[in-house]
Image (cartoon, rainbow, N blue to C red; front, top):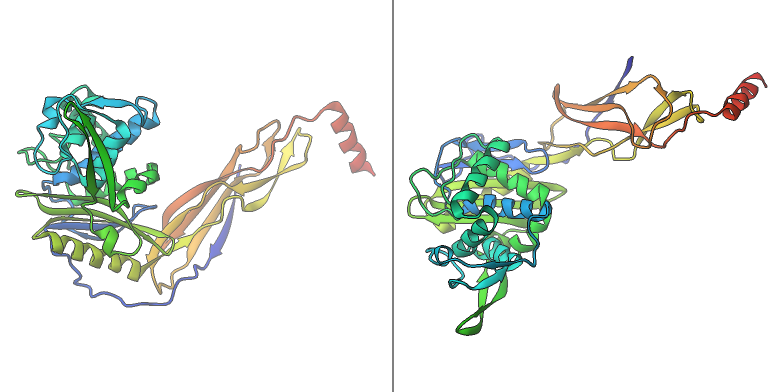
Length: 380
């Protein structure tokens, strides 16, 4: 049986700050703003319109690179031999030469900082066997992530007839990259760096400069990726972290490069100015004792396993509620961390998240001696 205990927490919110007008909009064909942890949409504008993403495509390329390293298919020190196809990429590049070798780390850094098309295709061929094979992986990953309005045709974002995505889908893959591999920010927040070319012509250094001016112009910026072509115009997936809250904004088809950065800063200001984070119980918080049957302990304490947080409008008076659903008892033996129930959180009557309640300690099955001691304790 499940025992239900209702607890109500009134969220302590920050004082009301400037509230933007109801007709707030962004100068671009499409835009979206989400809170990074929860994925909650804070603002949207034509967010499902299919548009060419230009080099913002490389967010997916980076995600698949980090996936390959995480599951052991690649190591950062592995060497990659550059093909003629990769070296022949136009647009932004680090001027790799055919048969030049670079490490996975160097090529990844060049993609994240300098938006290098040649580095992106070289990595695509390394992981997928060919750029076409890698593109198939990109589209499969998009399906897994729920990017319903996306189709990739290349690894770097050069204009192609059937290469498109949406602001919402870009936000989805941006969130996945930042949440799953936060170390990518080591590169996406780097303004300048240097790599070394070693070819038959000798050794030379090449400077990398970040294409994302947001990291210089906006306090708390963490990334993420720019993109521009004649067809896509000017795109940006921008991310920032302030006041314990991460935001991801996407702008597509802005009319010029300065506008995309200006509008992104306005979009992030909108989020940080109007929203704050409310938190559930801290992991490790103890939420009661449960009777143990046939154990060497009479009870076990339940504790919250993970933090649940949610963005809410500043100055909102609505209550933040939690409902505890926990087992009335448990049979021994069981391990520390065994699930005993859940704590479920609601805001404005809608569920916003839940966390497992787990056993704070292991309990062994009672021995004959334990049973005798318990009987004697009950008698006396």
